[in-house]
Amino acid sequence: MLAEHGLEGLDARQIIDRLDAMPVAERPTDLVASVRPNEVVVTDDQQHESSVPMTSDEFYVSVAPYVDQTHECYFHSLTTCLGELQNASVGVTVTDDATGEVLIDEARQTFDNGFVGLWLPRGIDATISIEHDGRAGTSRVSTGGDEDATCLTSLQLTSPLT
Image 1: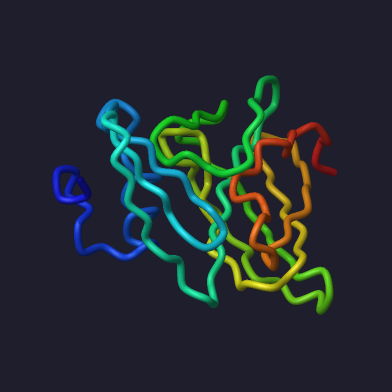
Image 2: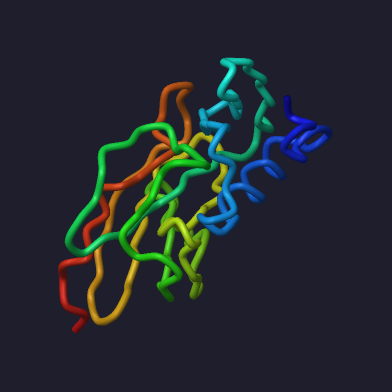
């Protein structure tokens, strides 16, 4: 099943990076790929399922900043999740809450699906701040547990930048 979609032989990071960055119009409609803390679970329309393990040192969280509309999500779907701000320039800062270390501080562009993907170290609590078009928002994320969220759709951009 993975071979049919050009995913055979890829590790979890390669599958995630490929599918999350894929233009929405090109995404397979007969495939659901769900990012879990410890694996990527790929299921086709015949209910055949494959699991590819994540590495033990990295955690993937996909963030859909929004202004007006969002959706509920917990484990990111690489083929079906859509966020409001598609192909938008955003400023992203991720800070480790325990140490104060800034892990990411850069300009990014959301994917065609409205998400920005972040590879973070496992075992941390962090604050994610995103800026876009004169607005900003923050949210917290944890990367230590087997049931931590991989999809963050609650980061609303409301605060005007000062």
